[in-house]
Image (cartoon, rainbow, N blue to C red; front, side, top):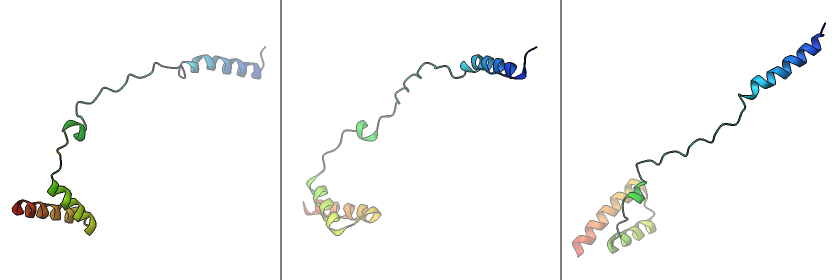
Length: 85
């Protein structure tokens, strides 16, 4: 007759074989397919900024204008620069 401890040892040993397949190393997953959408900056070539745009941007920086106010300021500044030319 076998003892309880030997049965437990055999059961533990057998379970190692059954569980080992769950922990087996699998093949590395394939690299993700490249997306069809490119980053907006890479998709379009950057337009060179006009001198008026650069000057308006510098002025907005010195005034500390940000967000919606900056967008509005830049629009008005560029329009004023066009009308001067």
